[in-house]
Amino acid sequence: MRDLAIGVRCEEKPMNHGFSNEESVKLIAEAGFKKVFMSFQNEHLSGGGGYRKYLNLIRENNLEVSFVHLGYRVNQGIATLWEEGEAGDELINDYIKDLDIVASDGIKMVCMHVTKSNRQSPMSEIGIARMRKLLDHAEKLGIEVALENTVWPGYIEFICDHIKSPNLKVCLDSGHNHVYFKDSFNFDKFKNKIACVHLHDNDGTADQHLLPYDGNIDWGKLICDLKDSGYQGDITSESVYKESYQHITPLEFFIEAKNRLARIAENLAKLEEEDERK
Ligand SMILES: [Zn+2]
Image (cartoon, rainbow, N blue to C red; front, side, top):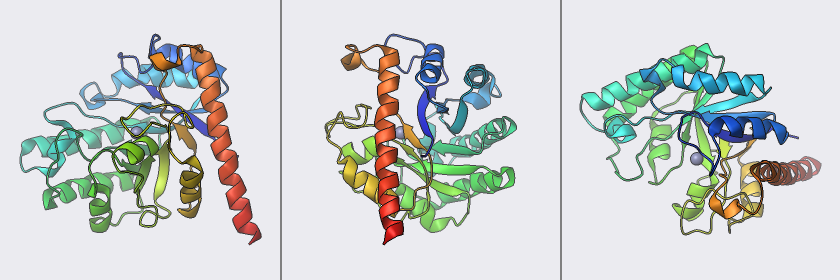
């Protein structure tokens, strides 16, 4: 079966309700996970100083890093990628620094957003030129860059149409796909390009980051689409322990998360076996 993974936020602000991100790492290991993904913001400012504290903790707990989720809070953030001006140039240079940081720690994949949720920038040539610069650097380092579906349609498609790089990949976020895209993710277009997933559920009204099967995503269909798209990667959760989960302990939450992911992995494996028998 594939590896199961879950997210750790590598910043002070807790990802989960009522306990620290450091505590999450220990509970994730205790729940039996073998892998995590890490998310960070603005690490280029400290040369990785913030996230390495978590990386050490993760490795001390015998957890492997599946990928790192890059983030950027300077200026207008990722929106400037598409806009003329120095802010966008700086942004891509800072992302390049992030790639150097994670490469020096032996990490082979990053995922990133290409739009800002509260500001829709125009798709532009300059945005493509900057992404090309990032991908050229990623190729030199041997890092895959997976672009995540966030809120606005068409941007990942636009980049994939304009940049041909073996290191350019896609990250499917099941929650965003359900609430912001009405389940319209283009699995055909991204066949063999999906390198990682953020699996979490919602009821279609907000990005709730619930455990898979706690909202109303059609998981049967999603698993079938993943199989058809040739997805080979880890089964990774981006679910969050919220107040609504307080009837179970944080450890029980992570164990439950692992069980739900295992169910997804098993169903995916079954479909693949059926295909092989055909
Ligand atoms: Zn996500």
